[in-house]
Image (tube, rainbow, N blue to C red):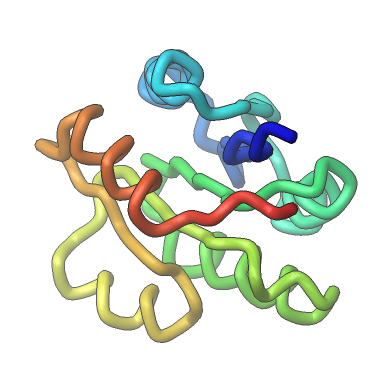
Length: 134
Protein backbone atom coordinates (compact mmCIF):
# COMPACT_ATOMS: atom_id res chain seq x y z
CA UNK A 1 0.00 0.00 0.00
CA UNK A 2 1.31 3.47 -0.87
CA UNK A 3 2.42 5.73 1.93
CA UNK A 4 0.05 8.62 2.63
CA UNK A 5 1.15 12.01 1.33
CA UNK A 6 2.00 14.73 3.84
CA UNK A 7 -1.20 16.70 4.58
CA UNK A 8 -0.69 20.41 5.18
CA UNK A 9 -3.21 22.90 6.50
CA UNK A 10 -2.27 26.40 5.37
CA UNK A 11 -4.00 29.16 7.30
CA UNK A 12 -4.10 32.96 7.62
CA UNK A 13 -4.92 33.73 11.26
CA UNK A 14 -6.22 37.09 12.41
CA UNK A 15 -7.21 40.13 10.41
CA UNK A 16 -4.44 39.93 7.82
CA UNK A 17 -6.07 39.84 4.38
CA UNK A 18 -2.92 39.60 2.28
CA UNK A 19 -2.95 36.04 1.00
CA UNK A 20 -0.97 36.11 -2.25
CA UNK A 21 2.04 34.52 -0.52
CA UNK A 22 -0.12 31.85 1.09
CA UNK A 23 -1.67 30.99 -2.26
CA UNK A 24 1.81 30.75 -3.84
CA UNK A 25 2.86 28.43 -1.01
CA UNK A 26 -0.26 26.29 -1.43
CA UNK A 27 0.52 25.78 -5.09
CA UNK A 28 4.19 25.07 -4.40
CA UNK A 29 3.27 22.52 -1.73
CA UNK A 30 0.85 20.82 -4.10
CA UNK A 31 3.42 20.76 -6.88
CA UNK A 32 5.93 19.21 -4.44
CA UNK A 33 3.50 16.32 -3.87
CA UNK A 34 1.96 17.41 -0.58
CA UNK A 35 -1.79 17.45 0.01
CA UNK A 36 -2.93 20.99 0.84
CA UNK A 37 -5.97 22.37 2.61
CA UNK A 38 -6.12 26.17 2.52
CA UNK A 39 -8.51 27.87 4.95
CA UNK A 40 -8.39 31.35 3.45
CA UNK A 41 -8.08 34.59 5.40
CA UNK A 42 -9.41 35.79 8.75
CA UNK A 43 -9.29 32.52 10.70
CA UNK A 44 -9.26 32.43 14.49
CA UNK A 45 -6.77 30.15 16.21
CA UNK A 46 -9.72 28.04 17.36
CA UNK A 47 -10.98 27.62 13.79
CA UNK A 48 -7.51 26.63 12.61
CA UNK A 49 -7.17 24.04 15.39
CA UNK A 50 -10.63 22.61 14.65
CA UNK A 51 -9.85 22.32 10.94
CA UNK A 52 -6.46 20.71 11.63
CA UNK A 53 -8.14 18.10 13.80
CA UNK A 54 -11.00 17.48 11.37
CA UNK A 55 -8.66 17.15 8.37
CA UNK A 56 -6.13 14.97 10.27
CA UNK A 57 -3.20 17.02 9.01
CA UNK A 58 0.49 16.42 9.60
CA UNK A 59 1.48 20.08 9.54
CA UNK A 60 -0.09 23.51 10.03
CA UNK A 61 1.53 26.37 8.15
CA UNK A 62 0.60 29.83 9.41
CA UNK A 63 1.07 33.06 7.48
CA UNK A 64 0.68 36.44 9.10
CA UNK A 65 1.79 39.85 7.90
CA UNK A 66 -0.18 41.96 10.40
CA UNK A 67 2.33 41.77 13.24
CA UNK A 68 0.07 39.66 15.45
CA UNK A 69 2.21 36.53 15.09
CA UNK A 70 3.37 36.65 18.75
CA UNK A 71 -0.22 36.03 19.86
CA UNK A 72 -1.75 34.05 17.00
CA UNK A 73 0.97 31.48 16.32
CA UNK A 74 1.38 30.35 19.96
CA UNK A 75 -2.43 30.22 20.33
CA UNK A 76 -2.63 27.68 17.50
CA UNK A 77 0.23 25.57 18.91
CA UNK A 78 -1.35 25.66 22.38
CA UNK A 79 -4.78 24.75 21.01
CA UNK A 80 -3.36 21.71 19.24
CA UNK A 81 -1.56 20.61 22.42
CA UNK A 82 -4.72 21.04 24.50
CA UNK A 83 -6.65 18.87 22.02
CA UNK A 84 -4.16 16.00 22.07
CA UNK A 85 -2.65 16.93 18.70
CA UNK A 86 0.78 18.06 19.79
CA UNK A 87 2.28 15.77 17.16
CA UNK A 88 1.09 18.13 14.40
CA UNK A 89 4.06 20.19 13.23
CA UNK A 90 3.37 23.94 13.34
CA UNK A 91 5.42 26.38 11.27
CA UNK A 92 5.01 30.06 10.61
CA UNK A 93 6.02 32.60 8.05
CA UNK A 94 5.80 36.27 7.32
CA UNK A 95 7.56 39.46 8.25
CA UNK A 96 8.80 38.26 11.61
CA UNK A 97 11.61 40.07 13.43
CA UNK A 98 14.59 37.91 14.42
CA UNK A 99 13.98 38.70 18.11
CA UNK A 100 10.51 37.12 17.91
CA UNK A 101 11.72 33.77 16.56
CA UNK A 102 13.11 32.21 19.80
CA UNK A 103 9.88 32.87 21.78
CA UNK A 104 7.80 31.46 18.92
CA UNK A 105 9.89 28.30 18.85
CA UNK A 106 9.63 28.06 22.65
CA UNK A 107 5.83 28.25 22.21
CA UNK A 108 5.88 25.14 20.01
CA UNK A 109 6.56 26.29 16.46
CA UNK A 110 9.11 24.06 14.77
CA UNK A 111 10.30 26.57 12.17
CA UNK A 112 9.82 30.17 11.10
CA UNK A 113 10.27 31.14 7.46
CA UNK A 114 11.07 34.79 6.89
CA UNK A 115 11.33 36.82 3.66
CA UNK A 116 14.03 35.38 1.46
CA UNK A 117 13.21 31.75 2.22
CA UNK A 118 12.88 30.02 -1.13
CA UNK A 119 9.98 27.76 -2.03
CA UNK A 120 12.45 24.94 -2.62
CA UNK A 121 14.03 25.38 0.82
CA UNK A 122 10.61 25.35 2.50
CA UNK A 123 9.52 22.24 0.59
CA UNK A 124 12.82 20.53 1.44
CA UNK A 125 12.39 21.39 5.13
CA UNK A 126 8.88 19.91 5.12
CA UNK A 127 10.01 16.73 3.38
CA UNK A 128 12.84 16.29 5.91
CA UNK A 129 10.93 17.23 9.08
CA UNK A 130 7.30 16.19 8.66
CA UNK A 131 6.22 12.55 8.71
CA UNK A 132 2.85 11.61 7.28
CA UNK A 133 0.53 9.68 9.57
CA UNK A 134 -0.09 6.05 8.74
